[in-house]
Image (cartoon, rainbow, N blue to C red):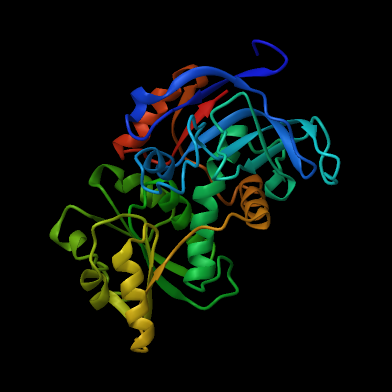
Length: 330
């Protein structure tokens, strides 16, 4: 740090501009409120939504103001805490979700609520933990909450389709589903076939082929749920491949998804599309960290960048070709 009250950070000060708009600066060191912890960041993870926010997807909601320090998924060490914090102490290694409004992950230090902070065991690296937060929780919630399936052997047998299965959310979704009694069909590009199969997928189809574009199971199975991690596939493509009560869980819902959802509800349709919005919860994150610790879930890291080259990591995310997660090491 340059002084006791300043830290190194990366921010952007307007919408758009991509990686070249990121600026390395000295920023004020944040102070934890009563229910918050101050974390010295060891690793942070970029999600596609971070770049979309920069491009104005959620304007004027996010960012609320400029300049803005992006990224919300971090792992590190607690160095200070508010007076009401009960479950942590300075020196604890943790993984945490930062507030979407304030961001702050691309910095030396960040603050977040105790309620969004989880202990990180030594068996789980900072990079593995930071990667888990939004992508892992999204994968878990789409399967268990939106699709209503179990990720242990206690649930009934089911068939699901995971699209864009080599990406951040997709690679977790395949693994979590295979912890349950779930047959997984997955889509990806041909170059990632072996990778997706190694995650446990039962069937893999190339989205660039006619069969892949039609998302048909090679064995003719109908899907009880589709975990749709991509864009551009119409409901009319999914519908004939769904089981009687099949659901399409849409990870990037637009106005059309919400309209379709409302229409299906009004007409009491058995096959429905479900718009998904993640709600990060500490108990979900704790569960995922435990799975990694036990060797039941793995974080696949596409690439790692030093903090000094954060803009290169941003560019990699914008490319849309990451296999697994993109990590910045601080």
